[in-house]
Image (cartoon, rainbow, N blue to C red; front, side, top):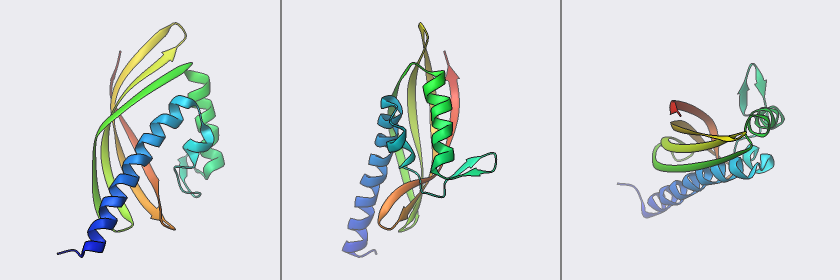
Length: 135
């Protein structure tokens, strides 16, 4: 059985990871690119061989600022499993509404996540969106 200290650390980690997901949604909806990229480690892999927060911010600016006039992300059903005290993985549902000109697109999806604690702080190591539908 885990010690009381280990159990408390796990509970605090779960709360910090859930806050991470809530901060992600809020940063997207507020178009706060600095807050959003700060949820990922400095060496985040972005895709296309790119790496780092500057590359991630460029993706954010291109995707969020140019494609959507407004967004509203509603998250829930967050499941978190620990690999060890500093690494975890999870899944979370997200219902999103995206304003595109005079129309709103409603989307249902799930995120498959990997989390890592670095210097006492939890980050998204990887976040894979799985889109189910958009209408």
